[in-house]
Image: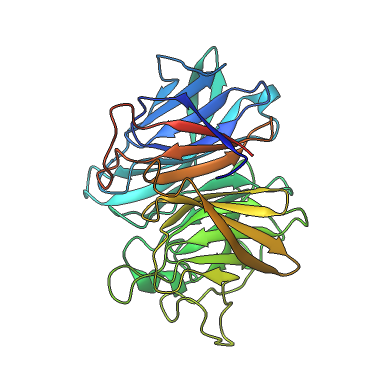
Length: 330
């Protein structure tokens, strides 16, 4: 971590899952228990701008967050969360749009609904691409066969318009599916060439490891559960890089210059990888074990990296001031 400075922006958060910077520099963030919060000028607003009816169990709850490219004018905020259907008790994932007015996020509009949910493998990362479309990751919800089924949105990366409709140039007509064969993708970022990069969790337990960073190409199949890691199977796309027998548990990712940064949960570090040509090479680790589990990383308007810890998620060892947003100035 040489030649870099690490500062705490805010502390005392409860499992911050995703962050997004507004044009005025404010940080909008989700807490997994159901709150949408705002940080202004380095201070956390004491009152949440929204409380959503989430089912926060295991890994589920309030997760992904994205601000509309025209947020300064329309105030549209998008999020993804798990909820329980009262009639059946089933967990489902949904993507919604809220509108921020007078310090509150209101007027919830459901864009995608009834997607398979679970206490783990929900995906739920949201990012707007350079094309103005909203990209959504969905885990396999613990039903690995769904990842290969085109009629299910589980185990997929989805692409929709800002109003929830399906873009006419999606690879499967009438379907929000952009790619399939994913286990639990939680990181999305675009490089300087406009290419979409995604990070996802490999199999847990035995054999374990084989976390992946993939180059996402429309209509392609990434193999889960038929294959994982680099297998050289012509039916599926191999990852750019994988963790082998070790476990990263990658979550949010960000690209700054010619480097990709991956927030690692179980790995408890910020992985640094160099983008070179069509490849990706591990280029050292930052925050190695110093701040525990890391959930999200974004590039701020000041060119610094902002990282959230996730030590209060039931799998970490929280310090008294956890969880936090850290600012890393290279």
